[in-house]
Image (tube, rainbow, N blue to C red; front, side, top):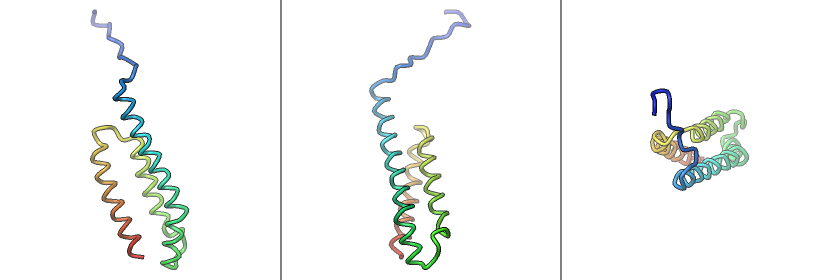
Length: 100
């Protein structure tokens, strides 16, 4: 093989790659559903309990949307760290929820 000739990468994904992709997609899909639940129920309840407008809690929905987007584009190396950060954020959100 000459210098200019390069091997074509194998475009066919291995079963392991397909499984990882499917698991990643399912987790992302679950986070999107959680985001919709956050917007439709939890924020309304929190705003009512705090006697404030729902729009004052928009920052929580925006933060959750950013986490979902990060999950979608995160590569395998960063995924573990991102999962840890997301777990910490979810725990903080749960504490906020329990405080109302």
